[in-house]
Structure formats: structure tokens, C-alpha cells
Image (cartoon, rainbow, N blue to C red; front, side):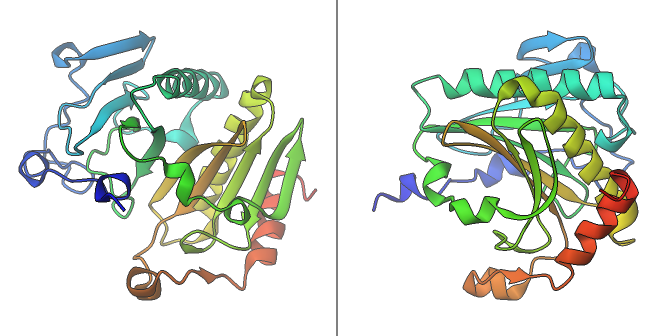
Length: 257
């Protein structure tokens, strides 16, 4: 098989030039000086979509979605109005790029925290068009199913019983895009739970968006040091606490229902 259809090439020369503020707060944040930002694609209030200044991935078109002007904020703190505007804007731009025939598929994701793989602390997401790789070929339906936490207006929140990487992973399934704001609310609830109630050591997570069978899925993954069993053998592990986690998040955020 052609390696360009399975692997991305990371340009280490460009990568070495990227500023890192996720750990070192003494480094100046490039997203705080909006008047100096170049390559703006679209803007709506505080939301800003622009070309990535450090395109480390070859055969890809990388963009950054700046979520807010407040460098110290994060998704769990947003007002519902701002949260809904952000997800509507981001999903719209992701779906628009997905219609572009030059891309085999388009990634939409968010890194938060030192274990997430991100380098910039300022709240942002990324939309990346891949010219040769279709991520959907690697996705298995069972990785997006699991035990039910909550369902409302055709939006379903579950905890994976067959996670992609391992332990606890939350899934959100959106069957009708008109209920996108319900999905946004579920995302914020899960992020609040992970950062404040799930485990005192958690400070990192990822959001991943997927288009599968004409539906939108979101996977929310708390990040720890990755298990060596997964790194070396691609063997995921399943938490023994799934039922306890479901009961806990229901009690804290859904009135026990």
C-alpha cells in the first residue's frame, strides 16, 4: 500500500520553529496579538479562522480556529451563547472544507492541556484537510457506541465500552444537525466533568469530530500518559469504572437521570 495513504509526513524543521506556550507561560502567545495575525479566512466576533502559520503536515491544508480573545479561558467556562456560536461556526467551516474535492477527508479537533499533543495554551481548534488519507477508513462503528449516559432530541451521549485508545472515552452522536446546540451543551458538560470532577490529576483532553454514515460524532478523550500496551501493541484497555462514571456524571450534571 502507498504509504502516503496511511501516514502523514511531519516537517521537523517547521515543527522546531513553533512557539510552545502550553507549559511555558513566559513565551509570548501568538494568538493574543490579533492585529498581527495573517492568513485570515473567516471571522465572526471573537472567532477567527486562519491558515496555520506552521504547516508541519505535508500534503495537508492546516487551519486554526481561535475560539476567544481571552487567553486564560477554556471551553468549560464559556457562556452558552458563545459555546453555541463557536460550535456552529466551527462545524460549518469543517463541513464546507469537507465538500472540497481536493481533500480525501477533513479533520476537526481540539487539543487542551500538556498531555493533549498541543503546543499553544490559547483556546483554539484545528481544521485540517488531508489530500491523500481518508480517516474514516480507520474508524470502527463499535468505537463510537457504548453505555448510555443521556439522550435528548436525537443527540446521544455514551461512554465507550470498546474505546479507541483505552479507559474512559465519551461519545456524542448527532443525527440531525438542527440539534447542534444540544451536542455543544453535552460537549461542555463532559469537559467540565473531566476537568473538575472525574480525576484530580486530569488537566488535558482532546475533542475529535467525525462524519460517519451522514451523521456527526464527537469523541472526548481525557489524556494521560499513553499506556505502553497501546503504544507497543495497539491493545486498548477498558476501565472497570464505566458504570460508576455514568452514575457520577448523571448525578452531578443531569439531576441523577
